[in-house]
Length: 403
Image 1 (cartoon, rainbow, N blue to C red):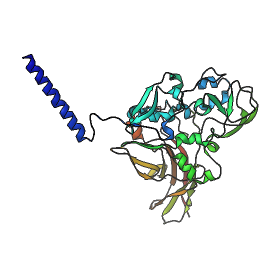
Image 2 (cartoon, one colour):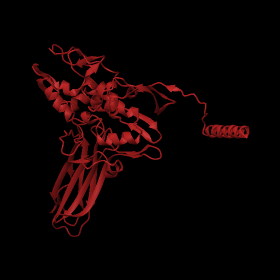
Image 3 (cartoon, helix red, strand yellow):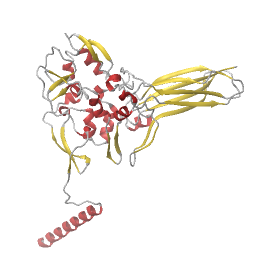
């Protein structure tokens, strides 16, 4: 009897094994498939290796850098870089994408900030990392996101741009390292990570193909304004750079200060004094006058909305909305559907004709708002009410008069 049960067990095991083999074969795989190790090929695949604490420092943390570099530290604390890890949208995206390591490489660019050391991937699949635990992982350093050492440490040495300084720690001068090349390492990352997941940040490419790169203006020229001041306590005053990195101006937390750097200039077109019994023609010209890249740039969810409101006695009579930005399909496959971002120095006109019989007490209001994402995307990610999605960057209301 026991022998019969044993033979039945082996027969069942054979059937299950055969069934598993057939399923894998039909899917183009083998249950005995040996995984291929795929080496990294992109700049954003790898990060700065684990760093030692340089001589003269007590830690690698920004807070300790701030003991001497007080003003710079206070600027960095309100920057987007300081929120790189704690940002609500990023954390929601990371959770949705199974804590994918490649997304961390720009938000946590030093190995000490990451729990695992990832050296390659299996079968060209970013969701199958070749990794080991990082014995030098520092959770408090992780919380700082793109922190001081992300730009100012290399080979266990502090990197600076000024010579003849009396610092409490050794400094290696490397202006080429502290150039736009460092910015572009993350702000020019484009990769198809999966069918429904694309990393698409092409700011560096937009800059290199635009007019400002030929004129010697780069990321630092705009996003790190020059300032004359001591770089540290007791240092002499000299030319340096602000470290709050002005950009979109949309704060990461409601009520926090954020510095806006508007690339667009706006001008009303059309006369506010109109011929009687003729269509009212009004519009807005938007010019990418100041940005060395497209506007908007970076995250493909970013966009501008331009709203025209025709008002009668102060109440809306007609509203029209125009959009500047990319549109994407994310499911079942990720692909760009359209793109009308403004290139450097490009102008675009947004116009409207109004035909009205009653022309008394009319005014025209134009509002331009800059958006991090749509409200639908905000709700989809279950982000809190403390996470702002937009700011108004231009608003004008004009009375409409007739000749």
